[in-house]
Image 1 (cartoon, one colour):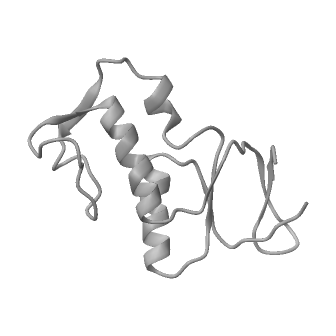
Image 2 (cartoon, rainbow, N blue to C red; image 1 turned 90 degrees about the vertical axis):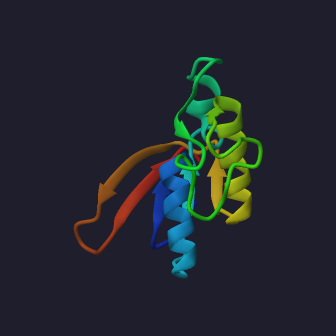
Image 3 (cartoon, rainbow, N blue to C red; image 1 turned 120 degrees about the vertical axis):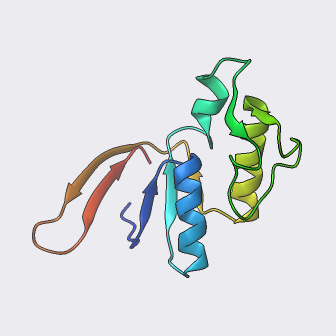
Length: 119
């Protein structure tokens, strides 16, 4: 199936969600492709005892506070996962999970790229 979209974000982590919010705020249609779940690396590739490297007032997006962490406390990995899930819902992120980007090719005869995915 071929689908056309002007703006594609690869990855539904912190940077992908932040970019999605900015694009939405500027009325730019886009989708996010994430090969696993939102912030999968925070879920499965971090130590259970991991905390963010700064206080929660610092390690957050400008438009949303951590709901379960005091401003001067360091967010635990599970709080970070919950935060990003809630943020994605808040901004209504157009994310498609379990879709792996397999190839990105710049088109030579027209503007844009061809993206091949697992979907």
